Length: 586
Ligand SMILES: Cc1cc2nc3c(=O)[nH]c(=O)nc-3n(C[C@H](O)[C@H](O)[C@H](O)COP(=O)(O)OP(=O)(O)OC[C@H]3O[C@@H](n4cnc5c(N)ncnc54)[C@H](O)[C@@H]3O)c2cc1C
Image 1 (tube, rainbow, N blue to C red):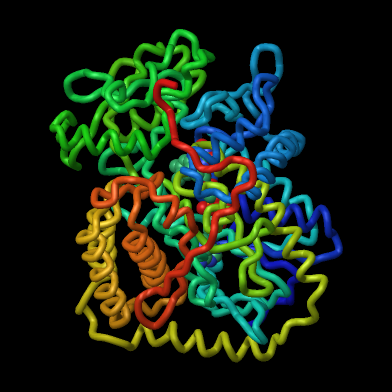
Image 2 (cartoon, rainbow, N blue to C red):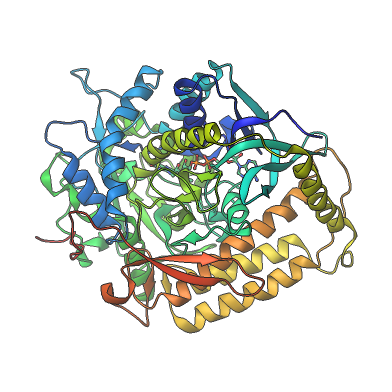
C-alpha cells in the first residue's frame, strides 16, 4: 500500500531528523514533510545524551578557538570548511532551541551556563543538568508538532530506498504494528538514522543503533566515508556499556587505577585539573583530554596490569566523591542515579567502576556541506552522515550541535531539491517495493530452521570487531575480522526467520537489522585494514605514526558483490595546516 507523496521524507525522528523537519516546515511551509521512525521519536538515541552541546557563547571564547579544538581533536581529518560553517551556525541554533523552550542550565547571573568538556580548551558546552539530550529532543518534538505539514509514521521500519531514473524517490517500509509493507514516495529523502555502535559488544548505544541508514545508502551505491574511525568513550559501566557522562569529569571527577594512582598523569595529557577551581586554564588536561587518548591510556594500564579485574574484564575507578553530595545532586544527578541503579554504587561514598565502551561513529554516509549525497534526491544528517566535522575523533558535545546545524542544512537542501524535481513515479516504485517484499518473504522460507541463530551471528561479529578493530589495531587481527565478516554475511544469507507473525515481528526486524549491521561492520573493518597509519581513534600497533603524506585523506568505501572497493578523497584545509595534537605541557 502506498502513502501520499511527500515533498521531503525524513527517515529518523531523533535530533537530526526533527530539526530537518522543522526547517522544512518553518522555512518552506507549502511543502509536505514526513518523518518515518522505527521507534516513537522520543525513544530515539538522542534522548539519552547527557553531557551537553557545544557552541561559542562566553566572552573569553571565539569561533576560531572552537574551530581549532574541533580540527586538532579530529587529528586534522575534518573538512575545515564544514567545521567553519558548523561553528558559525552553532550559537544561533542553541539560542533558537532556547526560544523553542529548551531549559538550558543557568549561571547565578542568569546567563547560559557552560561546562568544560574533553578536548575543548575553553568551556563552551551548554547543558540542561545532565539530561541535555532529553530536553533537546523534547523541545524539537513539541516544536515539530506545531507544524501541520509534518506527517509522522511512527514505528515503521524502513528497509529499502526506492531509486528510479537515477534518483531516490522514496522508501519501502514495514509497518510494525500490522506487518503491512508500505511504499512512501517522496521527491527527496533525508537519512537521519543515527549510528552503528551495536557492531561492538560493549557500547553506550541503544539497541536500535545498527547502521540502518548507512547500509541503505551503501546498498544504493553511495560511499560510506571514514568508517574506520570509531570512538570509544573512556567511561562506560563494565558489562552494561551504559555511559557515565563526560560531565562527571567536567565537574571534577578523576580516574584512578587499582593502585589508587591518577594514572593519566603518566600519559602526557597535561597538568592535573584543579578541581577547586573548575575555570582554571589547565582544564585542557588530564581527565578532560580527548576521548581517544583516554581510552588508549586505559589500554596501556591494562597491559601493565594496573587495572582491576571483574566479571566483565578490566576496569578502573571514576572518583567523584570529593565533589560532595550537594554538587553531585545539582550538577550530575543522573550519574548518581545510574551508578546506583546499575552497579549498586552510591558515588557520593564510593568509586564508580568504568571501562572504555564504543560510543560514536565518526564515519557515515558521504555527504557535502549541505547533506547531499552522490545519489540525487538522497540526503543525510546527524550521526549516520559524515560531512565531515569529526574527522578521526569527535570532541564530546559537538554531536548534539551537529544534529541541529546539519539537520537544518539538509532539510533546506532537500526542500530545494524537491522544488526542482517533478512528480515521482509512484507505480514504478510499487513494483520495486514488490521485489523487495519478495526478498523479505524469502527470509521465512530460505535455509534450514535451527542451523544458525541471529544471536550467535551478532555475538561472533561483536567479538571479531572488538578483537580486530578495537582501541588498538594491527594487520593480522584486522584481516581476521574481515574474514569473519565474509563468513557471517554468507551465514546470515542462509538464516531462516521462523516467526511469521505480522504484529511486531521482532525476529524479522532483527534479521533485517543484522544485515545492516554487517554492511556497516564491513566498511569499518576493510577501511581500517587499508589505513596504514595511526590517527585519532584509529591506532595501529604496526603503523604507530600519523602519515599525512599518504593518509591525510578521507576513505570512501563502496559496496560491491565481494569486498568493498575503497577510494580516497582529499581533506579540505582552509586555515589550519596539519600540526601536532598537543594536550600535554605546552
Ligand atoms: C548515551 C549517549 C550519550 C551521548 N551524549 C552526548 C552528549 O552529551 N553530547 C553530544 O554532543 N553527543 C552525545 N552523544 C552522541 C549523540 O547523542 C548522538 O550522536 C546523536 O543523538 C544522534 O542523533 P541522530 O538524530 O543522528 O540519531 P538518533 O537520535 O539515534 O535517531 C535515529 C532515528 O532513526 C530512526 N531509524 C533508524 N533506523 C531506522 C529504520 N530502518 N527505519 C526507520 N527509522 C529508523 C530511529 O527510530 C530514530 O528515530 C551521546 C550518545 C550516547 C549514545
